[in-house]
Image 1 (cartoon, rainbow, N blue to C red):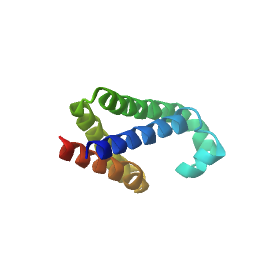
Image 2: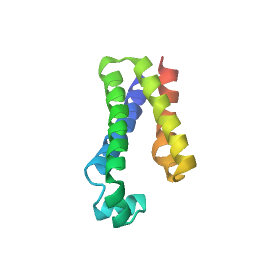
Image 3: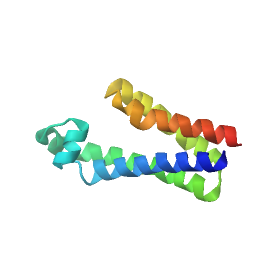
Image 4: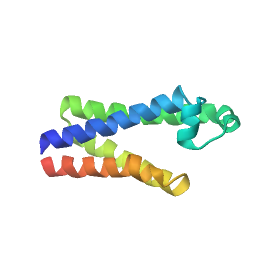
Length: 117
């Protein structure tokens, strides 16, 4: 059970590192615009906001990675909860796709972390 929870926590961390890269460094690229369904003009205008949002995703990933490296399940629980809450908010205010990309993996990881304790 512990191995499975570590794998899922690691996967959630990787998802958030990927989102960091998209939002901070690749926001204006065609592929990222297609991923987020935005125009080139909107990407240009919103780049500073996206970079800020990407940084927050990086903090989520860092907390999860710290929790994995140290074996600190409290960190994992806290940061997975943050991922889930942010994902729910994003699904309500932005796109339901966030439920599948962020909330479901985060909730599955959280469930396994709690079961493995």
